[in-house]
Image (tube, rainbow, N blue to C red; front, side, top):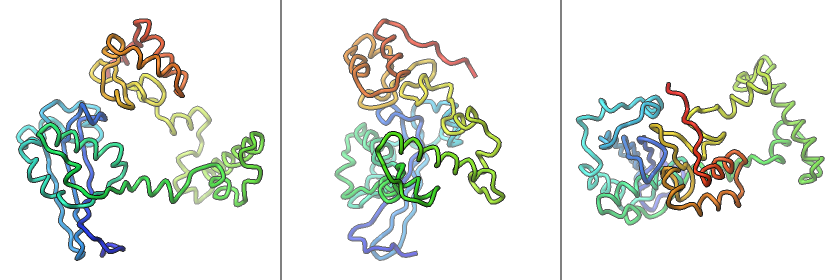
Length: 272
């Protein structure tokens, strides 16, 4: 199908598989890219790469690419010129690409002395379109699930009542004969719904994974320090931990930061 708007430049839509979640620390294992040209033709490329560092078992469990699979593959450095040429002069798009895929590519090109930003013109994160066009605020939820306007929005009591109505509607859908995806909630109590919504990953030191274990080392998993061991920050950059304590972070995140300032780290998760 031809692209629905006129393209002034080729558009490369791409996705990555990597060794982990840290663009500055981890490496790319696979790059898949589809280039749509202004004339409607498309070019597809896929590069399977040896990341030159081990692929953790928990990552292999997600994308099914192991160290053995890439042992004889070229490295990113081997294919850097080829990849750069495929992207050069193109606009780019991806899903959550602003936060993850583009930073990963930028880091890989930086390591080989290339500036990836110079290869691309415009960037479109498809996830951002989704979030802007399909808002997920309470007012939208009341309209969708309850079929009414949310009168009194941002009044605490009215918001609480509206949230209760939405929750009742969501759980009621799970009991319908045509529950569809809401069938995942059928028969679950509140504790089971909690686990379904936010699986309790044992590698996360806090509920939302702001600090995360990897190979027995606890890493920061957000912001500019993402990918850095907490122990190193503890010893060399304690002001970062003080900033967390003053910031808008969850209590469990602040508790880890407070303990770290006292020289204590949480125990690692049990071996699996």
